[in-house]
Image (cartoon, rainbow, N blue to C red; front, side, top):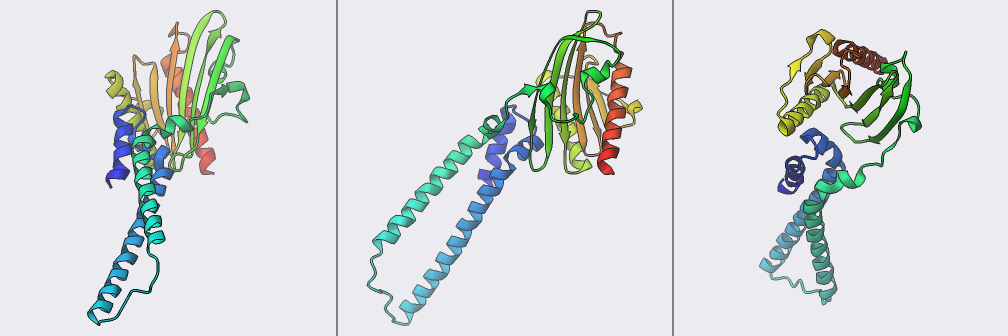
Length: 260
């Protein structure tokens, strides 16, 4: 239990993600370590029954010396146990860094295959012309969170309005897991920056809050969670109520499409 919990604890205190995200990133490694632990338990049980049989033979006066050379078997046993120790030490120390090693490189947003399952900056400002525009994304896949897309865009909207748009899209296995993830993401933001959050009941979503001077929101509907930041040099250009409502409508449509 210590070996399973300790890397997750290190991951959490290092600020690299929420507990659910950490579990999602490391779940395959947990399965591996638990499988190794199960194999070790089976080996110990077999060894115990072997000792019981030997004791019975001793009690009955039988000889159990079969004139076999025990040294090669002892060497193999010691080698296996040393390998187990090395593996456990490497697992305990190295597993918190696995998400960093596994993370994919950023790609250009125009190279994203198909249509993103969320609104892009161009869809938030469909009637305007984007200029000096740039954007990158990366996508991670996991067992608990099958889809995680980190997406950001920045540039100018004519006439000369600057926008910064950052979005994290999470698709979980169940709505309950999505709600927990939304709360964890907010908890992490509050822990890092002491943000005060306010609910957004008017959006009609399962969960919706706003924080960071009304520039960032966390939205959850069904199995999907969005964490969105929109920074603009003119807040009246895209009013808060407009862009959050557009995001909420797109999220509801995406959830309905996924359910169907």
